[in-house]
Length: 425
Image: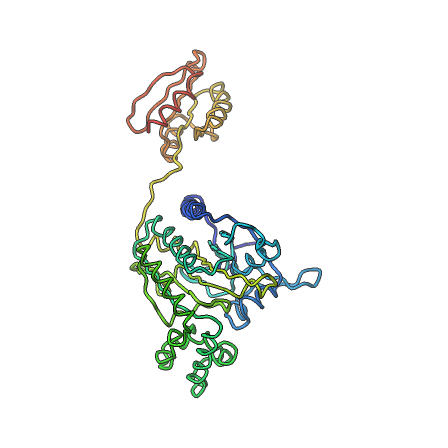
């Protein structure tokens, strides 16, 4: 029987997983610096959570969710995105009662969408996201944008572009919605079936259609910026002024529409302009969702957040040719010659590890030359060589693999010697 990995998934193997760990550490360290705390929610939730709150007109709900019925005849769904689950937890655990507001959270974990696999896009993928819930200050919008730009730039990305738009408040969106219906309705038969169904339910989603994006009506569609009321316009201008003060470059794109129904006011995406990155350039997306908490039964408090795909992040790093210095080099490989010496190294390596030294030994009964080759493959800084004669004399030889210098030290002093040598490197 041949069992292969499911389509749209991937194995992240040693040698690659270290790259994931590197950017995960960058992201989590920066989040903590901005006072965001980690939250972990279930991988599956009640289906209704996503149907009601992500939006039944979205591609995610209509086409992409992995939904199943459990033994209790309950409909459950593998989470396709992170915001709805985080807001559900915020409400259910009454985090709105925390005296420290806004509540600032980050998450990192697998999401699931049944979509066509392509470069950097999988059916099981990992999203890193941030949610700031409880403030309507445009400064928190700017902070969230600064945070994600900080993550990308700290990782070394340079060919990225921040694009922002305002979707306005409820009144602004209502006026814009009416204008969109009047604009598209006379020729809606020329559009795909999805767009035809969206006309009455959520015409804003027509602007996000990939099939009909080149239709002439798309280019002449009414801009949301022309329908912003005074409050929405002032809010958006304030966000822009804060970004300018933070020296964060951005472009305003009136056609930017996020694919989830809960967004209002600030919406944004970050694109990669790296050569060879691919036709789909979006790295990160997010925005403000001021009605989502109350929609889930909580108080009427606003929120804003973003999410990015770790796979897309790594693809952008590769497209820009960014390389990192390996951080997990082996400190010492312990090579042995003779049965007694080999047995002794079991505890010796254990003691080195307990002292904080990254140590390894041979488990294949290889000859000395082969053990040195293994040390080279592991990029060991030092090789400690123990033979039968050295063991009888309670001594061991330590070779610097970079300089070739070799030093004989007492076995009892090996740990202290290596600690000094590793620190000096």
